[in-house]
Length: 380
Image (cartoon, one colour):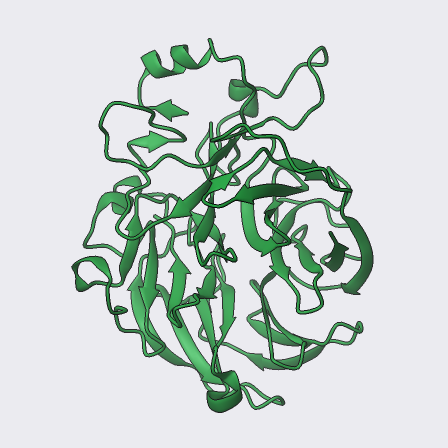
């Protein structure tokens, strides 16, 4: 937990728990400022949950197959009713259909996307009523803004996209980009503050927020203030997942100290840029994260719910995190595949009960292997 002041930083030094965070920004501070455990310290994951409860007894997950390889920064994955997936490539503007047997078919190119820095063609979501409306939704960066668009997909080709929400601030960094339909039938979208921290606290801006909209792009009924904004005070959320209790969780990039896993509630303020990590007591009005990570351990992006746990991909941390959840409380995380596959970006639960996990080693910050980028099948 870091508030903007030396006093709170000093107070952290007295804690007996090891905590961690991460950031994936080109302007991230030197990780030695918040160093990893020394060689004399135990090699347990450097993280802290809100409860500190132990992880459940469970075997480690295993990578059981490579679903696809030779991709270029796969960013979004959304499953169709037949079990195949639509996959976006951030930097090529391509939309691919991946059935899970290793074959890849390009079904469209969204040429209104203008990839630059962390922006491009990012999130994808399939309509809950796809069998009737054949609609799919995308989050992308254009030359002017970030926006949400929709199109029909007939199983063969993607039709021309139609903007439904425009004017989301864009930047070279912190463009957000994740989409997810909630159990309420509305579309949730994460946005970044573009490196301009105060946007996250500006209720008149769509930057640094989690949005909740109808499939037509209007503010969803019940939103605070009648706007598209569901929650605020976010730096750069790139993971959204609903658990089996219909609760929304989000993974968020910190600055140079703490990355976060947050439980998202209507109208809640998560503190950025006034607070990074936990604010603690003091009547700030900000909601504390459930889990924080150090910079060397996370840089959290994709987030999925499966088998009673949240699964979180780490970019700079080059690992997969499992976070057990009991009701509305997150337990102590465990990490897996540390350094084995490089940067892990997107994590989604597949219809067959496995996870699909993408590498992101061609995004300008990784060290690509000959197979990269890949989609891995992970069996929990």
